[in-house]
Image: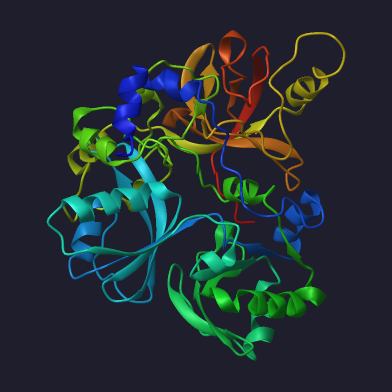
Length: 447
């Protein structure tokens, strides 16, 4: 029996927004231990010592190869591929023809005309669709989906980050590491094992992401942890993975702009109904009734600087037109402590309850959006909030009107869903709550 497509699922339901707003699935669960000590100390280690992050399990790792690979990637991506080649990496962003964001992932190019796309499935799926249906000599060589079993995957993928990271790497390498430029790749040793590394300096902190054959994973981890013991190296669990992402300025829960429009219909017919895109849910106070209203642009997500009009690509014309007008800007919103305390206090006693906020990350849907208001007028959207011990407060990333993106600007966020909440199993009955928020115009801190 032929597998149902995403388009068939949407057609059967009749209302894609309702289908996703009341989806019965649950947000993605990281296939990793939630905590190794406690999430507060694990957060602190990131800024004050070093963390060991095991990223071997939760991301897709998809390899494409072929003589037309760079032209295909260039045609699909907003990024320039001038000078791109072996031992380089790129944060890769793809859009639909209207210039709305479909996804972003990291491209790892270890050898010419062969690239691994690592991250959520949206980008790899978009590339695979065009490799299969377009006139490109590109093949999908290997696909590793998320798995709790490292033996089921080709590579381990680790990251050591924090002020003590470089000293740990020097010990396991037996001396100083080679110079690896920003978003460049290089090789070093962990004892007898050679690994390949990427320097992307998450949130400005020293460190590297590195990988190698899965069969070496446990031995490499043991050597790293042994060397890091005297430097406070702390393994971190899945409870703070999304927190480190938000602190790094990455909005990782954006609705792919694929669910509507004739131009995307063939893609929806290609995608399975039970895949990543077909299983997504949306939620939050920004209940528009129109899935298109939840789409974002690269400008709103802070990727405007990556857009290069030196090549033809899907969405180019739309993005060129957008560039002529002010665009919403990505900012950090710091939530008012008293208002957050009121949310938690509502769980006590017999009064009305606000939407519960799980510590340290309060997402209850795959792709949340909450309204951000100024004097009752909507001026932007906020993505899911997190708590950080570095600020001792809650904050979220948001896209707001550019003239409001100034430090100290006070706005209002609506927390919780209207009408008592949706039918999502993660949503208890609640009432909405106004949260005062303060704009921090720099969503990524480098201090």
